[in-house]
Image (cartoon, rainbow, N blue to C red; front, side, top):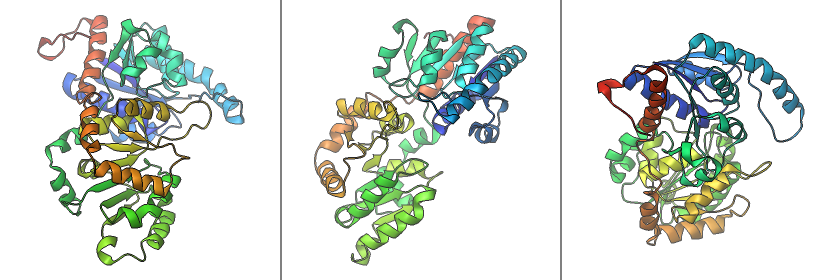
Length: 386
């Protein structure tokens, strides 16, 4: 069974695709070819994950006119020809795309060659690339029920976002034990603050200024992002300079976490973060209450704001807009949530979004489509209904 996997541009598109690819390889012994852009982050991540990769010239599609838009459009026909050639040579039994502009030529080339296509929509509202190839997909997997309105019901599957195995595994660790492993107090509530891999300057600054009050009743683990570490460290040191040593020890600042990120999420009482689809899916699986500060829209609507609204409406999280966030507001909201029944209420509401088997469910849907091409059976003659 040969499966073409595509998704690129950012880790948010690449990691879910790699999770599905890994499951298909390990469980179904599928031969995987990853189709990516020659200038995307996938050129680093895919080979590191042990997958064979083919690259094309994919053009990023913008909703506005600029020099980058013109250059991106110029790459599209070249990439399309390259994608068609790759699909014809590899002859996949099915294609899975997880979004990003490289998914457009991958989806089109698959359609032109009669290869069944499963498109995955991570955020609530579809991005431009998924809007373009959505009509071509045989199946569309969505992470959140609110995405159903954007796609035909008869070919849409509510399967969730692929979840990292370390997130699933860390559920076996108690909250107190997770804190101990991180070198933190096991009994003091932990507020985890993260703005994503690149960090979030405004979020970092607000939290740093709120530290003198926050540290009176909790401990704070702040992930600043590598580029924002120095300025965040300088600001936080100045704001807590007047505190006694015991309170100062309740604060830890790190540029990023890799192996310990799952442990940090497990250890948290409350998470203050952006509202990316992968983050929200992980919070749901771990049943972690949060204050969401969605990335503000640059041009057009922000998918993060729509994601956050979905959780807010279900009372699974509290939302504070980025331009409204101030130290005083953050302090009051954290105090209210930590010292009330909100934590339990949010954790209960998060269960409706939790889909811990999303990776295997999506992989099974891909295999089901491949079976329609090859007539092959899955391991142990397992039949799949989607």
